[in-house]
Image (cartoon, rainbow, N blue to C red; front, side, top):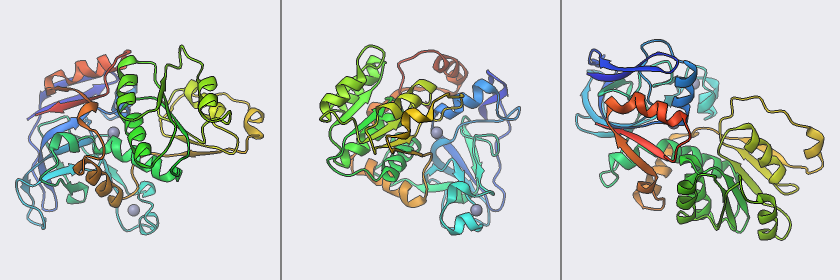
Length: 338
Ligand SMILES: [Zn+2]
Ligand SMILES: [Zn+2]
């Protein structure tokens, strides 16, 4: 089969590799769509996966073959694959803290081979069925939707409260939609790229600001009776927005760090100390319940998904797309389609 294989940092090659064969407790899935994720770019740029690894963890597909020990599934079933699967047995798993399972395995992130390939082999616990009225294309965005939903849920934001969302990438745009559904108002978005900013406006932001040109603090203050937003969702992951998120939130407000920031950030705690704020981090989804809930949001058309798909590319175009995404761009979500 054809696969995009990592050789080194910023070196990915599309080549023929052996087709995976299902062991007794495994399933081979024909990949239909796989999303290019910001975390893939991070792994790619810094070469953080072993040589010859196949990345890609935002996968939907169709079951091609099953091992003899697998029950409850059949050939042709349409499935979404979870990027990671917990063991279900350890202390963390028994407390439903699945993210912290020390035995957690993942696809496309350095352990099991991922979905930038025609086929992928997984244990059945990675699979979630896709309802017949949800397309494989739309379900491929469940991973960023899940991250956004989880952050909105963790924040415990209430109807009528105000929020600022920083960044209109896939996660920021889903955060906007989840907050809109939760009755958050006013809902302010900052995004420097015009195309993404416009999308944020269409998907529910009451005010969209370009942080490189406009006075974000002044506008936020005006819209919130001089108080500032009650909650700030940082969905970018660069030092400047991380710092701004804390500066912009109102006194006693809450900051959610949703963007993954691998860089060092220098700050003076005293500047924030008297605000009595709380800062919370959020990543991934917590449970299969959350995934099912997000699937239902897509199924009931409560969130717009199609609008977030910028482009569908072939497997041959994957290495070039990675290089393109490392430069300034206007894309939201690129899917690889088979
Ligand atoms: Zn992802
Ligand atoms: Zn576990």
